[in-house]
Image 1: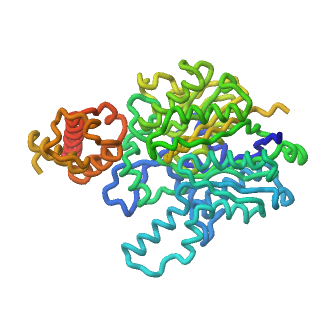
Image 2: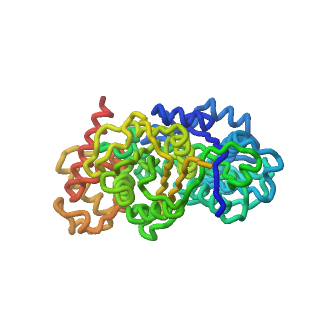
Image 3: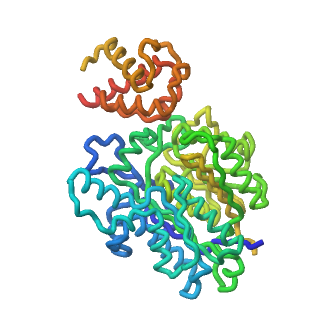
Length: 403
Length: 90
């Protein structure tokens, strides 16, 4: 069976540009959440998000701006460039044997929002003629493929909060099956625009306070944005070009609840984790750290805890579980990719990043999610979970590369 | 808008009935929301109406988990409206 390894990681988030900026923030518990305001929202109820800083947005536009690119594609390109540079891929390493799987929940949200305002409010008929190719969900993946000449298959999963995890999982499966040798896989999201923010407000799952996953006083999530891209390769091709291997993708699984559109099902999330462990041929006992979906909403955190207990035992002994969402925000279609990158770095640094803003144990949850301060771990195996609206679960398992 | 507690209770009861799509004569403060078949999606509609009419933002989360009856919801809404008015006057 073909083994799949990670040879490069790249990230753009509210914590800054680069996977190192993301990891430093995650490990030190430094939040990228900041005040946000939108011109079109006259009575904004939620005042914060993990938005990119203005300086970072500006430098990304300088580096990757183009009149045919929405910010979502710019974020993906900047993350992909970093991952590819770290992997040391050259021109000959792309071509038909290299695929691109980059998902997004909202696609070109800014372009859509701007053009609807122009069309519906300002009654302007001269809209952006490039709106269609900027809005389409696969634009980020296509721009990455064009820049590097990766002419293998492109997929762009749009499965809400599981888009990024499923993209990495699908890339892994494509390599494992022998369809391709290499894949640029991840997720991108740039949906912090007035219209999208308002509909999240209306769904009432955002906190007007701070995002506090697993804490008794949690009352909702904080939106984020950004992109994460991983270079995945078959072990054989990575070794043939003398690449430095960061870790191995040990296993992946995805399933669906086929139940409620919004309310998650703990049994199905547990099944998904077990399937991923089965794919990795590992037991739950070998997993030392789980980066939880941990949105900080009541529905998610209680369900996810129940699922984790089914898989890792009632007392969750021997495994550290945390949510890094209060640090980089809930980046929706990019969340799974950004969190996979945090998880890979947790493995490399043997450190479980903390769940910040944690105040008090909830009796309905009853475990300490690496509260507020990072903790050392000794483990060869880590897991990252995504549980999306639409009942879509995805679990990724990474392990240290042992030759 | 009246801030008298009884008046606001009646207004809120009517709002819950309207947005939860149940007949106002079928509900009492003691009615369990579950028995009225008011589900999470209806909650979102009720909370949106509360925001529109009283300017309060209540997220679906922590504070709502202990809400079982219509009265629980009314109490939570009243507290939030009072908090909101206090903030506005501060």
